[in-house]
Length: 568
Image (cartoon, rainbow, N blue to C red):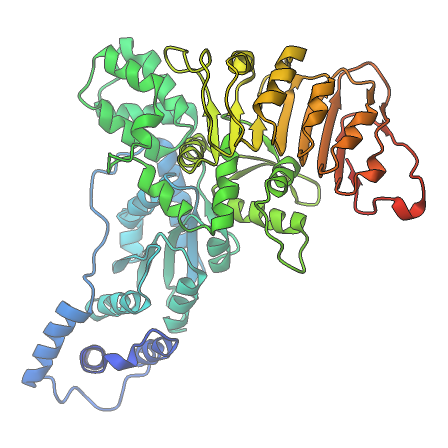
């Protein structure tokens, strides 16, 4: 104990009187590790200056000024649904039954999934308190100070023994984890670090087998909402329909449920519940409400590069719950010129890296993978989807065209200044009939999760050509389209996705000399699609995708063959 006291004293004096030894570079790691090793191999000299008056001053000032306060999470009522208890027990067993060496157990998941709530429950669990009587809770965050993190740990070591369990909250960088690992003495004491992060690559860097947190089921979601609103009481029968609908719209995200529950607490009138059920996203992403989910979402969004931010926002063009084909998303990004060349990578390779990065940050979720592990389809959570739509609209990147409560937006001429528009098939005819002024629009998206197609009339196509003369990207794959002569005026098209009763691809399609990606889905009863257009002269065409076999025209000469074209 005397040796341990000496180590504390020397460490305090070093922190208080020699802060230059703890600079922002890697030297601090060596200093701290050297001091930690002294706990295993105590110095020969004793604490001869223990009664020295300056020691008390140094200790007091070091704790007050230099050492951050050692704080744990709020010890609050941890009434949680059964699934959280099950998840907690899984992590607890990993912490208790791990190896004698230092072991890190990362908890990884999307924002608002309850990582901190789970960690808080584990931190105060009697099993953890019995196995690790001394614990330290460290808030890291996005803008962390490495020196303060180390001093926080040292402050905890000064007050406790070294057989400890530590928790690191909201880790954003692998460097933080690596630096802290270097500080720990290799003494087979069974040190444990539990950490939470939104970033999969940070989690897997710390441990190849992190704990992935799952979304709540609809039943679990309603139970959590009911608990947060009514406590141990049951939801009144006349509010059950609204409550279950609200819980379902939160898509298994505990943070959304907690935010909504605060709005409904002590409110038992049907009108309030009906109002929130109708527009659940307003309270969740209300920028004027500090308790909304907006800041938590923006924390992940602001961590992206400018290019990746725009790529992420374009995911808002797809409908709620839409399974996004990875190849389509990549082609759209390239056609929109969101992907910058990064030699030696091709544009497709760079776009794929962006996609994997967004998945690794839990901003997009993988739905299906190919046999070789590549992403086939992905999905965006409803909360993030609403954020993308709102932010893209604010920046005039994308605007959703939808009727107002009075449905007048589709019956009067409107001016659209966003770069892109997205619209539901059911309102497209009314929108075009209003003769919108949309010359600045460069992209037009019409997606649908339904299997049935909406027919696009010749009049609609003519109006389309007049409204969007400078269109670059056109995805109307969910509509039943047919070619008319006015359509061939859209010579600036770089991306085109269409569906219809096509027996062939007309010669006139060769006029789209800027086209890079062409997607054609035919519902005609033919065995193959006859490509009459001279695609070999379309030198920018890189991707031709058809849902049935395509019969291509022979290239005039080997030299004119478009060597870069792919057929899907």
